[in-house]
Image (cartoon, rainbow over all chains, first blue to last red; front, side, top):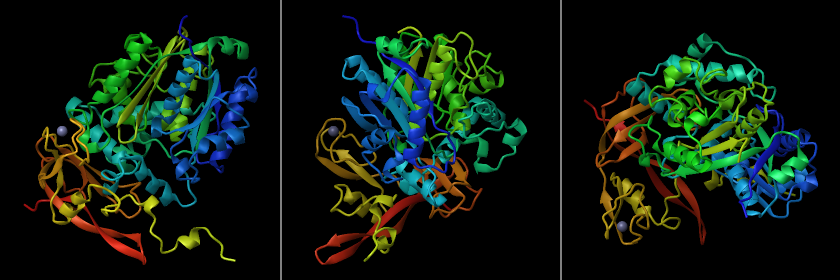
Amino acid sequence: MSERQVCMIGGGMSQWGRRSASLVDVVQEAAKACFDDIPGIKRKDIDGFLFASSYCGRNPFQVNAAPVMAERIGIKPLNMCSRVDTLCAGGSSAIILAAGLVKAGMADVVAVAGGEKLYTPQMWEAYYSEMASIDHDWDAPHGMGLPGPFFAMTAKDHMKRYGTKKEHLALVSVKARRAAAVNPKAQFQKEVTLEEVMKARPIVPPLTLFDCCPITDGASMTILTTPDRAKAFSNHPLVYIRGTAQATRHSMSANWPGEDLADWVHMRTAVKRAYEVARVKASDIDVAQTHDCFTISELIEAEELGFCKKGEGGPFIAAGQTDIGGRIPINTDGGLLGVGHPFGGTGIRQGMEIMKQLQGRATRQVKGAKIGLTHNLSGLNVEHTVLVYGLEP
Amino acid sequence: MPIPGIPVLEGKYFATMDFYPIEAPEFNRISKFYENLAQKKLTTTKCKKCGTTPFPPRVVCPECNSDELEWVELADHGKVLNLSEEVAGVPLGFEAPLIHAIIDLGNGLRMLSRIVNCPAGQLKEGDEVKLFVFSIPPMIMDIKEGTKESPRVFFAFEPVKK
Ligand SMILES: [Zn+2]
């Protein structure tokens, strides 16, 4: 008997941004958009549910959130109903786990939702709570919350070692905002110019406002099932999850595994493993959604994914190679920089954009895309997650 | 009728909102680290069986599984390898610019730390820094008769005056 395969068949997201809405509100919006996207599927068809969220335990002070969300959405899973937390990669972790459940025959139709409510009635709490997202006893007491300082030092190491320029970083942001401007669910609906990005106010030099992804409220939801069930539910081409990997080798910053902060050895481990499992190489990838939490991240990710040589991320981006029409379009929907980053919702958004690209129905379509991937890093760059999707299993 | 909610928390200690460790020996098995730190010594655990010396300290050796560990002292001076000065988005209680550095403490240990007692724009790569220990708000914990204050310390690094 051949192994069961697993497909992502459709999905949707709430409006992302600074929302006048609660976590259960945006999750319901995402579920509506998901069911609207797959008219053939009914709530009663869902037999498994995973909910990716990190800050639900802080705001709205709700742990064991999966049954809450399942009830509000109106689904009654009987095989699995659980919350997943790997911070920025939560949505991708949930997709990997759902794929495993379907492949193992432990569930047939799994809804994967994720999202966060990060804006609190007083803004200080949003920043303060970020200190829970890194190694609590050892890094947080140094006032390390939002990881801007760590990525500023990463950018400085890359600049020093490879001659990367501030303009290279700025171009990542210009590209993201251009894509987000035509994405109605994105947090930012306005393009920015290179000049505006270069002159933006500093956050932690060399990173300025447009180098950093925003704080975001929002949710997304997708559905994974077997190819047979997928064909019954939807007429879109089948999109298979071909291979996945999630690698970590340290938590506290003192145990950083690279030569310097621009050397992401743990990401290379995850990439190599995902390519092996998916039976692909870097040159096979037609479109990618990578974790552009900061502009420098996307630049280094293009290198560690093997799309360009190590150290050449800056010139690669400046030459338009990561734009539509270039060697490897990256973050075609606007990425974290343009669409926003409600942690548990992000991996699902990325997966859905790749799914739409392969199904030929993306807003900014990459012609003839057959294989795509998503990538997340988590926390203070301590974990890397890669999923490879394809039109063939 | 009293109305529960945020007002009833006034004067209470919020362990769930604290970014400092709970250092009291009643709440962890590495409280010796904090006792040593109060003596201005940065320490960690070394495995008596295989010699592995990880940071942060452990209660079980991650290499050989032994739980026979001893405390050893780490360097209290180091050299700045990289630094950042955060001007926006600094967490409540910290002042901008909030300075962080990666410090080479020797023996392969590179530590990320806050830099204190340092004016903005002064710190450079290669600068010498030294351990700085300071008191942090005590933890209020339950005892038989009410509550007690358990004192706490934490560390940062500061520039060595030239
Ligand atoms: Zn040992």
